[in-house]
Image (cartoon, rainbow, N blue to C red; front, side, top):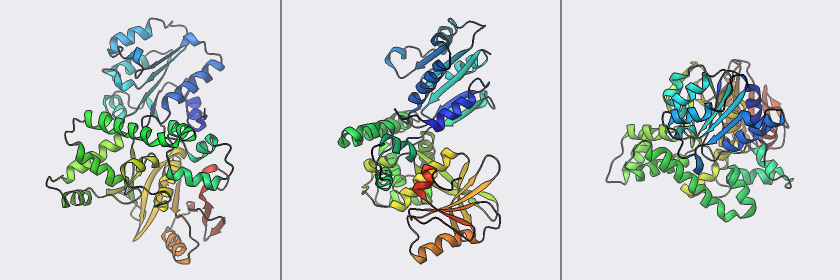
Length: 405
């Protein structure tokens, strides 16, 4: 089993803090396994098994526990007031009125509470209002490249492994399957995709036109790293169709997709004007393997965009808010606003060995007047400092070998 150290570190730091730990992320990204690993650490640190309550509401034996008051009574009946308890509720959104359950358990001073959910409904529902300032969200994604290398520990050629990483799936179970039988991976991804699209989106939001939703998904998956305009999507879809789809419907679909964690948005930020722009964000796909089941994805095609996708999620793991930057008429791939109010700028290119490409990537940085760090991430092997810009090999950066954020 791959130890998800990035997330475990966060959980260790939050242990016994009077906050609800809300672990979110797309289905099958490893949330339950993460909680199991943390539970194991608690036991190893001396916590008695009887002081840990662990319930997964997707498991058959827990399906009947949907009434929150009955469930609350069930949990509380074995809890003594003079001892510390750790309560884990996995896929808690499947419990009716789960917000009330969480709030009631949180009020118990001797309970340290951890919950997971596969839909941002968990945080956009009453829960966020009810518990403002009393929860902290940890967003879990499929394997980072560093975790992926641990899964393929016998492969010493990281360049070859990286090509594989950006062309295939990094869902934990998909990686395990790929090592046994690559032919099963697409079936597995198809099942995740269908669960998210049908269960988390179509059923939850009572959508009747699944065909239109699928068409929007295909277009968005095909446009990762590009500015996405709902108006343009509507125009493209309406061009060869009898039934029209409105600009507002597209906006709703994009919101549903981000709420189910299948895509993530990078809003646009005007560096010079220091303001957030409300239109045409960029979207990134939680797992590049999903492109294989919705679009005619070719191995080693569109590598620049795939590289940008990988960097986006790595920046997300490292903390901060990520924006697509606009600097006059130039575009900066990523502006990262760090929690300490520092900032970082990133340009991503497959290679800048060609003089014209090099000049294009560097010129976007030139008019930025502040002294925050600027990075040019490529697959080139040279590591240099050009006009105060750190040119870094992206594989080294992902593995923490080189100058990193």
